[in-house]
Image (cartoon, rainbow, N blue to C red; front, side, top):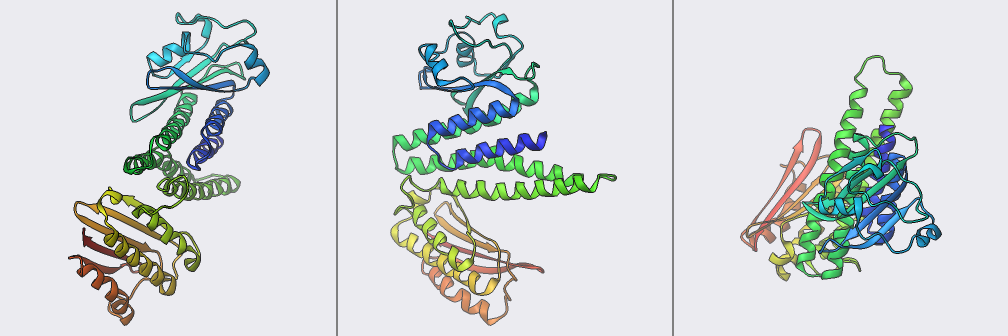
Length: 372
């Protein structure tokens, strides 16, 4: 059951990161929440800056039945309580709460209730509601934790959409960095923790072979999910129309073009305000270095994975390219010829370049720095 819950949660968050249209993304989140906690009905109310409901997404009730109830709920009763006090709320019986105002005529009966705020970094974007647990039992603390994770993912989706609507300037890129970090903190860290717990099962005596096999498959699924989420996090750095002429966009285009010769997609991560700090010449130098570094990996490393990090550290731009290949011979001619051009390029900008072997088993890391 825990494995099924985690799979459902991961699938919902991946849908958020995939950049789907907001209303369909929120619909998927509400449906996933209802499925995961076994609720008959689910809804998500989106709030504006004044705390008013501006959108209301629901599942479990037909369109015809919802239309027959009249206007979209505007935050009275229990819904209003969650807007005014955005903390998780579990109730055995909605009607018994002092804030309850009842339902309009024709509304289906609802008794058990679970509501959580849709928030990230302290900012509330709405509330996620689940009612009528199908088993007839009450919602549990585990249900609450699961729904809170989905609500946080919904907040990321809403915030990302609002950022797109506001502008496409530097602020968007910086906010996308924050969104990417939120997805990392909310999802990838939990995936790692879950994977480590599952791997611990293999060290327990007496576990049946069939169970061990299922655990192994689950861990493999987690690894693939982590890769998918990382890929979508990187995509958050692009504009709606794809890579643009910004430093980030050009770097993403360059690394994407390297996929064909590498045989796989290199991972890319940005740290710091690149687009506000890098001029055209610095960006060109960084692109040339990344291009040469990835070409060297493709020709010599026999690698299956490459990580590219481009970072601003004060007035210094740093490019780090790490592969898991056979490892470079630091005293050999290939090392000397491979580093010459990149070293010269760095020294022209008062920088440095170093290539090092990661360990006895192989792996190579390039660290290239310039002043901007």
